[in-house]
Length: 386
Image 1 (cartoon, one colour):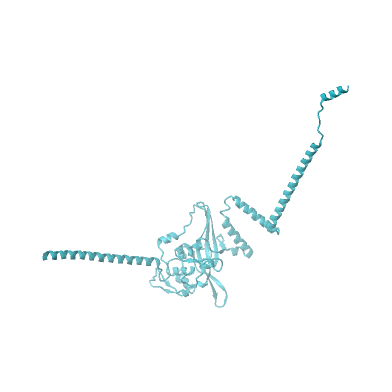
Image 2 (cartoon, helix red, strand yellow; image 1 turned 135 degrees about the vertical axis):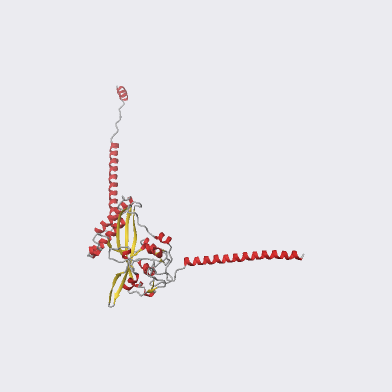
């Protein structure tokens, strides 16, 4: 009996050991999985200490805008614009002047990416931009040229140079304009005119020691495809009335929300519009004509609809009325009066015709009716007299 009980206890102890071992393994597995989830969530959502955002190769390929095939292209135009950051919706590229809880400005994002060797910058050549390895700039030389303080960051090597720049040393408040290269193209695949921004150049407005008007210093060119995955994560609000951040910086360029004046188009002589048209009035006329041609190129290829023809006629009448010193309302009022007079004249003519017809009918009715004589009756009366 005693031997049987001891054997039974041994079996129970073995089962308890197996159960305890299983519980410890399950607890260790759940804790390890929890740690993995926490680590993954941190790497995906959190930013680096230097303020940059991690971008995968798939994200880079998703945001990259490919050019249409040359076989499909029928017409293309390269336009250079200047964006004044004090006009229209352009201040969305300037504010905030320093990084805060709302994010950072366009120039801060570009400088952080250059300092961390995430993107490449190209030399500003004043009209002949070459985005090749030969014209890539060295970030250290660019920082020295524009007197931006920096130091080598931890992990910097000769092949992969990294730089540390304080927020106070980045001259974001002096970037008051941008140059952009805009490409317009018409292709047979979509039968539409499309525009896209190829590159942008921050322009430094800096005063000298003696004051006076600030001098403009174009810094470098950056291809928009290289920075699109990063600026797509920075949301901005473009309206002072509505502070909801509905658009990001990538939408700002993709939807053409910016406002800029054309200062050059690609030409054989490589001259700006100011060189071609020294007179300010002629320069403004040339800018307006280029702008109108870009927006009406695809529309002029097709026959206008009935509504478009009617709108053109109304615009033509309005222009003629303004040239004659009359308003469109006065012209329409005179047209209505002329129409009313013509209606009255036509009604009086119709009335006179109806009166003439009535008079002729009365004359016809006033004539005496011819009474047929009865020859038999006259004969009988004559016989009685006899």
